[in-house]
Image (cartoon, rainbow, N blue to C red; front, top):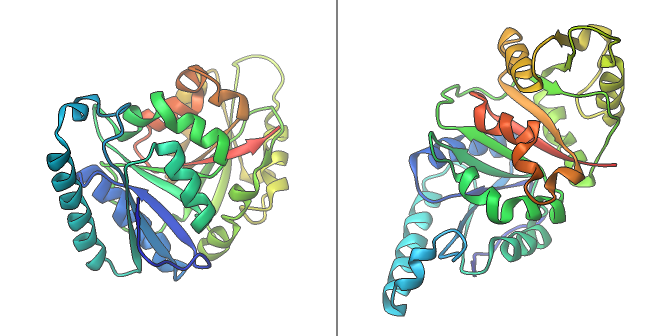
Length: 282
């Protein structure tokens, strides 16, 4: 792993990059957030992970080293052009080991990923290691789709909440610094069956209890009836003209393949706007 000198005290966003155009969109988004906090970026490339790139095992060592140096040089050049301080990390360790070291060194506010269509960086990472990493590190993940072209800071949040109470992890709560700076208008979105009692108030109270999104009143609640959770949340985000969707990740959803069938995972794959995933505790 190659690390450049860094300040662990600065607000930090770690951008997982493969130098593709979708990641460039995510990088620009993360740059705006870091700039708002006078923070820094870490450009992370996990190089030649055999779980993700099994064909790379056929490369000879000289070719591996040459290619690795090219990646490092390209990232270093990109980092120099950014308007905020940026460090470069090129790792040959597993993603999980790399994330563990970065968490220890930087305590980042979030890990930032790009998403392209049809195959996404998320789709490549999650089935193998990203879900266990999230379970172990419990750090927020921000996914930015390549179709997102808004250059403004997020100002209208749609926070999805169900009827189950939750508490945010300490790293999730650390985003309070960013939220206090952004001061976005926040609406809590709850999807309920067409018939039966509403439990939207439980979700509103859980979100309000985090104190992460400013003052929330009963007028901050938006309930959708009779739609699937994913469709209802996306529909509400459209109706609210939200420029960021916030979802909660339950600890149990990271076990095995459950994450890939969860509402959170489907929103990550379908949302046309940036999605911030906040790990929770029971």
